[in-house]
Structures are given as C-alpha cells and as structure tokens.
Length: 534
Image (cartoon, rainbow, N blue to C red; front, side, top):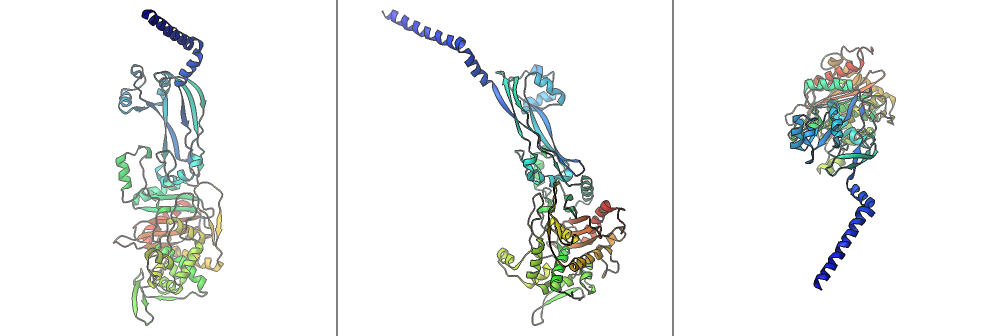
C-alpha cells in the first residue's frame, strides 16, 4: 500500500514537471524568449562632441577629438585580437584594462563584436588658456569661456540599443539616436596678436598681464596672462599638476581679470578729473622733490618724496600728468579729501566688475567706511596722500584700469568689454568736454613731450620715433617687502581717433617707463606700424 502511494505521488510530480516544461518550452516559448533576450539588450549612452571655439579669423582656439578605446573583458578572444592589435597594445589592454585604438583598427574590432568606447579629448592652444578656461572631471566648463558658455558648447546625449551575446559581444545594433555636437563659439580674439604678445612675454619671463581692446566696440583682441600652462591638460599627471598648483608664479591665475594690484601713477588721471570737477582753475605747484605734511600748528608730521628727488620745478596739471609729479598729486589729493576722490571713482565704477564674459574680481577703492569696516581704523590724511598716487589701499585688476582709460579715449562712452562675438552695449559718463581734452593733452605729452628729465614725458623715450601718436600713462607701484615695484603702462591710440586701448603690467618689473612702456610700444608697432602717420 505504501509503495503504491509513493508511486502515485511520484507520477503526479513527474506529470506536473512535464506539464510546466511543455508550457515554458512550447506554449509560452515566445514570451520567455523575449524575457531572456531583454537580459541581453543594453542601452549605451553616447554624447556629442563639445563645440569648437574660434578666434575672430577662424583659427581654432579649443576643439574636441574622439579617441577610440577597447575595454578589456575576460571573455575576449585573444587569438583573434592578435591579428588586429600590436603586442604593445595587447599588453596594455591586459595590464591597464583598456587600450587606445588606431582608426584603422576600429573596423576589425567591431567585426569581432566588441564595443568600442570613445573618450572626448579637449585640446587648447596654450597661449589662450586663461581666456578659454578648462573642464572639470565631469566634462563641464570650470573656468573662462568654457564655463560661461557651457550650455552652448556642451554636446547633447544620444543613445544606442544593442543586442549582445552572453559573452558580451555586440550581436546587433537595434536603435540608435545620434548625439548632437555642441554649438561652436566665435570670439573677438586675434590669435596672431595673442601669440605675438605671449612670445614676447616668454622672452622676458616675468609674471605679466597684457590686454588689447578695440576702443570703440569693447572687443578684446588679446588677453595674455603670463606664465601659462603649455602641457596638454588631458595628459597632465598628478606630479605635474601638483607642481603647477604650487608654482609661486601661479600659472593658473588669469592676472588680467583676477589679479589685484596697486595701480601706482596710472591712477593719476582719476585724481586729476576729481580736481578739475572741484576747481575751475587748476593750481600750479613748485615741486622741490618732496612734500611735507604739516599739522595745523605748522609742525611737519610726515615727508612724502617725489620719484625725482631733485624735483620738477613749476608744475601745472598737464605737466604733472606728463612727468608724473608725485608732489603735485600729494597736494591736490589732500586738498580734495578722500570723500570727493571716492565719489569720482564711483562715477567711473573703477573698482567694480566690468561685465566681461569670463570670471573677474572686484577691486578696492577705499573710503572712510571701508577702512573702518575692514581694518577697524579711522581714515588718516596720510591715507589720502598715498591714494593720490595710487598707493595705499587701492587695488585694481588690469582690465578695470584699461576700462577707465577706454572711457577717457571715448570722452565718457564706455563699451562693455567682451570676448565672445556679440552686440556691444555701452554706458556713459557725462563730463564737460574741457575736462576730457585736458586729461588727453596730459596723456599725449607722456609719450610725445621731450626735454630734460624734469620736463619730458615719462614714456617719451619709448615712443619718440613712432610715426603715430598715442596717449597713455606709466605707473610704478611700490609693493614693499624689498620687492621690485609693479610696472604699468596704460594708453590708447592712434590719438586723433583711438582704435586700440592697451594695458601692460609686469609684476615686480620695476619702473613703468623702463619695462611696461617699451613693451607697449612693441604692441602698438604691431597694430599700427606704418598705417598711421600723425
């Protein structure tokens, strides 16, 4: 009886098993095959290449390349791969897990059924790194134009549905949605000019900033921050990267928009404008080489020297600009007071961001309130005296200073500086035309007035034989700590109808007349040459 019961249970279980096997393999085979096949299909995301960035003449400044890679799998048929890959490639594939392919190898690898992955490599011309910027590890713009215009430049995602074998080979491509490349970006940069300036700075090998702007439109023709990084960004290893970020010359810093510096005497036109707005008849000062600040009782509290210790003699406002007479500006700054000077600085927004389409810092043009808040100290007359020659607490970027001189060149009309091609927008400062004329006359004499050291323009030696005329100002900004002064020249030309505005800064380069002005002359020669003969 027990035997019969066991047999019956066995037959029932066997019948159930046969029933379900028949159902799965025959009656429902289509459904289960679809399920199994679904396990062997996969969606692969692909992305379009990032857009190309061009200079104003169509030269590529930044562009992307697709580099094909084969990823290692333990199921790979090495015997067949040996017919396509070199021994070195095979060794790299096994040791590192991937290998870069040559274009002629792609077809053979795909024919074997292996999926090829593509890596986007972003390439830059090294001379424009600080303008273009770079990408982060996720392929997004991390600085410069790459960051500002990331949404435009970034490629769009595509996808591909593939059917693969159990070993992972691609058996069939089913559906493909082609990825879209990012949009291209056209800039105002003149790469030939950029390269010329960079090469000249490299010969000198001092940290520097040079900007060339179209005076009328605000288009940035060149913006060089030296030093830069000449290695390919995608190939920089950890050791090299650490070396770069610890370099005391700070090659990653865009000095043109992110570096803050004492402007020195290049700020004097601003002080002169404040004085002309306050005084209808500018005074004449007898410069004896030093200025004595005295108390109300007549006691000398402090002595401030001129850069020319022998003095400039009788000096009016135009001569003071021409010869950069410190004593003159000590006098008028103290007479004006910091409040009036600060008000004029605010009219020009000299320490504010210019609105350029890459990162920039705000500068510092101090006031009583600023010092009290920042340093918890009151404002002293000595602070005003130093502000009159661009020393003390004033800090500006080269671009901010250039923007101020472009405003002078255009009699108050200021184009918003920009790097990507776009329509120019302007702001306006309305001052009496006599003020603009006086300031321009003084700046012209900086480069064109000859004579003894007491009388000649501080940049005369640099421009004396030029066939064109430019207006500008040198600056020598003391920085302390036994370091050389920062060397400045800011100006525009040709004088009658300014076309180019230029700023040159050498960090710890010494005298503006000896370093920055001669360098500016090279750039004006490049731009103007024999075209203008004034």
